[in-house]
Image (cartoon, rainbow, N blue to C red; front, side):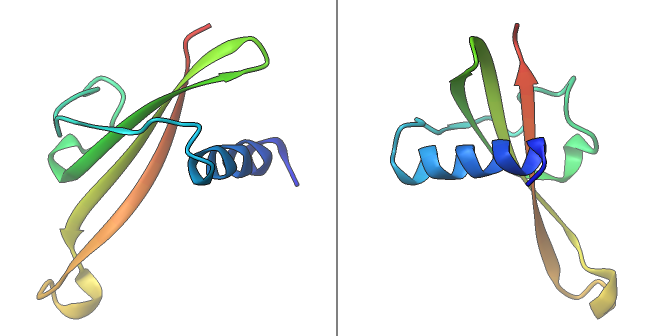
Length: 86
């Protein structure tokens, strides 16, 4: 398991154990960090301490028209952004 997979696994475990407190943000929050902000459907944030660093976790769900179905359906795509505040 590489360091990114280990971090994702740790985030998943802490979320399932309810150690992370996720809260919903405005869709336009963190505009300076997110590519294609107009596609953002929902956004959540949590803070996590790891190895003495404060990490801000952003879970961004984007919605876009699906080209595989002639744009008749919409597809959702989640993104996890990890911001190191330290």
